[in-house]
Image 1 (tube, rainbow, N blue to C red):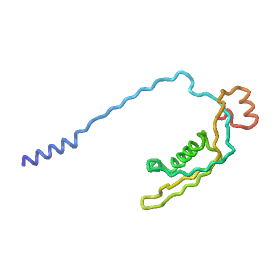
Image 2 (image 1 turned 90 degrees about the vertical axis):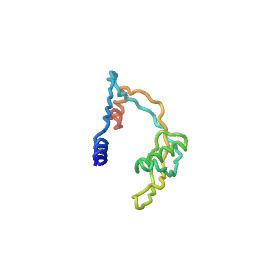
Image 3 (image 1 turned 90 degrees about the horizontal axis):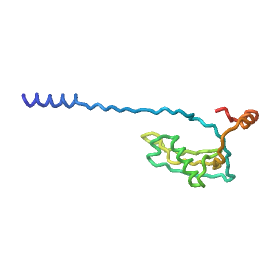
Image 4 (image 1 turned 45 degrees about the horizontal axis):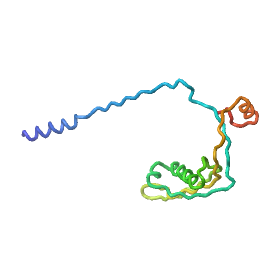
Length: 139
């Protein structure tokens, strides 16, 4: 009987004991403006690239769109290190199984481009952009 009571006390103690974790954080005020309006030129390559990427398990686990983003990133890195892929087309091959769909490969095609000549926007540029119907100043 004593063993049963002792076992019940140990189980009750184990179930009721828990640690409390308290995390605190502070934030610092930013007194300067965080937004800066800049424009840049975009240098687009005239060479269209095609790249096939086979995502690793950790990339696949992050989701379908992550596989596509990783393919674009790898394609840019393998072809001169551009900043963005223009007119992107993607082909995704998936395997359907018992555990659902799995991305086997992603093929991306497009024109690599680099941002150049970052500069602040002046009033004349904004007026010209609005007059020409571009998106300058509309973000």
